[in-house]
Length: 548
Image (cartoon, rainbow, N blue to C red; front, top):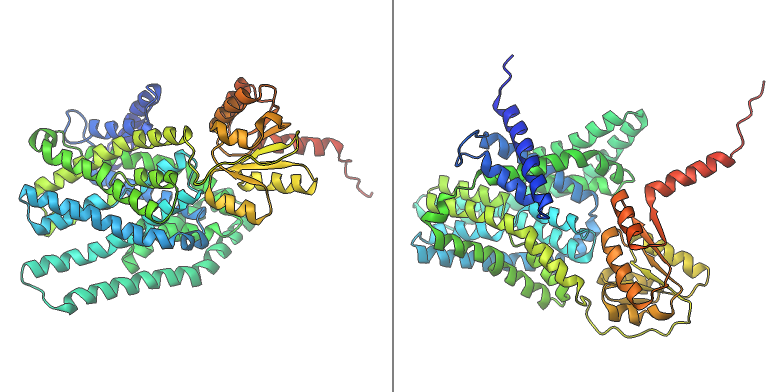
């Protein structure tokens, strides 16, 4: 048996080099994504030494895209998708049009022609699924209002690119004189629309029954291995079937499969089972992007490359920001969505490859797209961190923050998510005086509908804490899921009330250690509290008696 095959060599080399450079990036306090991209450059065809198989790397990366979109779908309901349709649909369409127009302009100035400009502009307009979702997950904002807008925006972009991939051959034929008339355009459009509609209908009518029933049956077998296999089979099978039968992208098919499964009680377990594979294949995605980077482009076409990167990082981001603000959303949402879209990825590579194959895009333009993707993906985590840092120091919510009349000794609760809302309900039932601080507009509206006293603002900002009566409060309960951000809130609160007792929430032992080091009075970690409570109940339960 041969011990060296392209598949094994690509997986081993990709993961090993990614680990080395990812560890270096972490040591330098840089996003690990930067390390993964550099690892791809090292094992790519444009640097000396070992060269991984780019075709295999791309296919492995596609599995990462499928698993990532499946995981997002698990936490994203149809109601969430419909709630952002009024901004996601027009916003994505206008942003794609603006970026495409800029790309056409750059192609015209370069002398590539209108057809090349169309492909070039479309490639610069669509964001990478993996990069966007990793950024949102890394900052714990997938479940927020702006996170849902970004994901909905991404879905609309994917649908638009599916249409673009169908229409590009039609446009190429028309340019070559092989196809004319309205039928040549509207027939592919109608066919694509019917296929997408058929897939969505199939998932909503049949998938909603078959997928949950299948997993419930597997759970009944008691086999964890079989459950893990079933989840992977559903994610990969639906994605592949959607692509084959309905010409829908892998990512879109996986998203709908996850969304259907997310409506069941098994969504959390399915997420945990797919997480290790999802992360591993997501790393291979970034390695595959790095393998496409040809450093010679920087020397051969520096001005064109710089202009393309500027369109990606600033041009389409500015368009997205202005669109979000025009719909009345706060500055925080506009910046988050703008930076989330400030990169390009997998659909851009597909468009570039198809455009070159059809003779619409010159090889030089394809190289610029690949290099611009590499640079934008490398820069995106830094931009995202910069925006997150700015938002931590500024008041993100619209409207003034006014003090609320509360009795001395009241409780301040930060966050109205799943945990915060349960705490607030319990406090209300006990007739405790309390106020909620929440910076997400949808959560604020929900708290108000539930009859809670809430301040819309950022708990990291002093005037928000002052408005909540931090000086006369008896306790501070930090219920947000981000433990390190909770530590920053603690530090700001103690500057205004040094003796204030604080209870904070944590998700990991690292967060627990961080919060305890900062002086939090009590840190609650879900898994630890569950174990302690089970031991308490076990100690108090009488042993079972058996009749003789």
